Image (cartoon, rainbow, N blue to C red; front, side):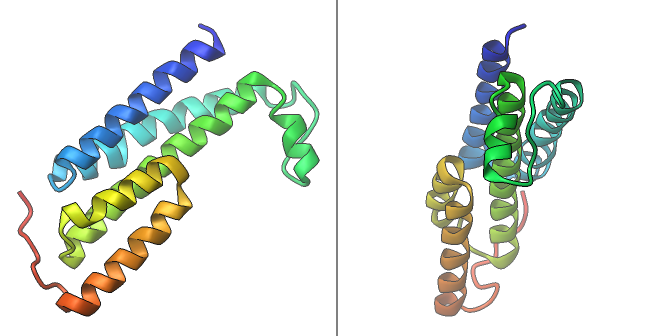
Length: 149
């Protein structure tokens, strides 16, 4: 299987995870199991395998920006880096949904944060924290808390 094929499969798996998170995120099986565990863990295992089997094929490392650029000149290591983003962004989005449930933040308010986390990772997390803080200040802690389905 080529790096491009693995890239396509991983992107599709992550996209399915994000769709599940947006549509069914408040359900425990969705944010807790599928998008918070199964998909990120699967991507994590693939990441670890790619890093272990392709590390050292090109010079470079994480000590300098030039070293990172050199390391990612290897398509397999670049793919490993991309899978790292896919796994952790989805994991962060799943945490946002679970945290919102715990804090009583309505799911519809979390969806813009999920979109931003999907596209720009940490920026979505920042938006979630802003949304959560604003909601809690306006509604009060744990107001509108909904029981888990």
